[in-house]
Amino acid sequence: MASFIDYLPVVTPDYSTALPYAPNFDVVMAGAYKQVVNDTDGGTRVVVTLKTTPDATIPLRFTGLTQTQVDALSDFYYNPVKAYGFGRSYKLTHPQTLEDYTVQNITEFTETAVIKSYGRYDVSFTVKILGTPT
Image 1 (cartoon, rainbow, N blue to C red):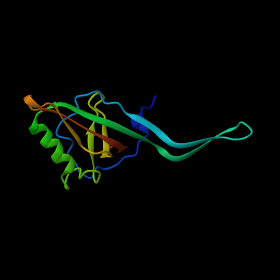
Image 2: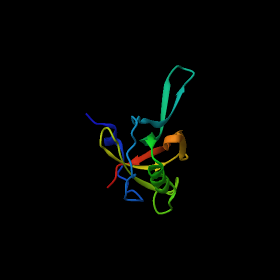
Image 3: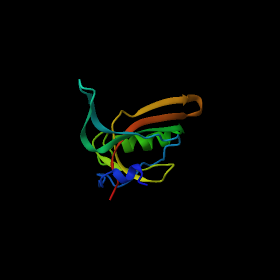
Image 4: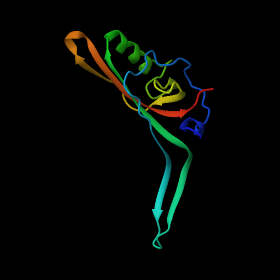
């Protein structure tokens, strides 16, 4: 039986180094084909597939980080030779399945001071799966 990863194209990441830290929260993937479903007047359902590769996103959460860890993730996210915001793809290893994906950031980097007196922070952003790395 094929898994989701079997339906993805092979995509070489723009940046070869992975995130400096793995998300420490359950990683949930949401995926679907780009399809339009129309019901005709005669009751027939017509499905038009716009893209034959499924689109999938993964919201990443990093909790209880120190300022040093936040700075490392921030550098990875914003640095022009690394992820460069939304600009470059990179390799992400799924923390539960250990499968490798080529991903690209699609939401802003969000940092929240959780317990400011203890210097603990949460970071989150979402990535889009582009394929599997070469």
